[in-house]
Image 1: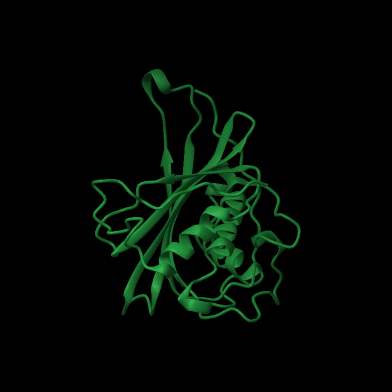
Image 2: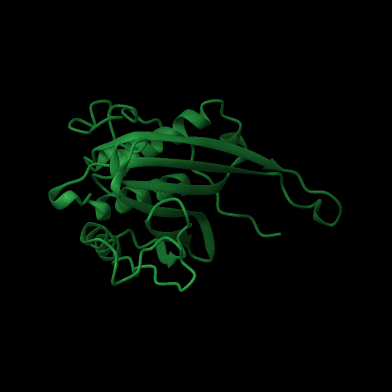
Length: 235
């Protein structure tokens, strides 16, 4: 496993204020932890430009689960920081994510898919013993049917998870962002259909897992795994 590679956002047009010489120490430490996290070898992580105007300071990563020549799933994770605190966050940090993947037709038709997909997120956090609060989000599935010159393609369904949560802040007001990134990569691997790493990931959570987690604890207990999905199909 290799550490995630990243950097503080220093784009001249970045309006988040997250410049190298002005970012608060807590934010800089949180970003440094993200960049030093050791992740699954199937997950390729790169820094990307963070969104603007969501918070005074922001840092973003994009990732893909790659197996052979196939991209099985991809996503984006954004770390937001407001030193003054945010009423809706109940903290000074917030993690925001988008994760998506293509699904097998029988998996996409499962009526429990939205609930199970959400439990993959909460289960990934709880499997690593992470405390969090104010988790919210959406699970969307969208189908595509092909016609004309594309008629030979099989119908495809994509699952998309959009979510955000407030990580518990530790010593110095800094959350364990490396562990949250690792949990997020567990979610990516789960939605891609890869087996969990021993002792971690939603697939390893049992009905009693999540003890000691913060607000939202128990939401992912007893995670049910759906059938494995296939990789994206060639045209």
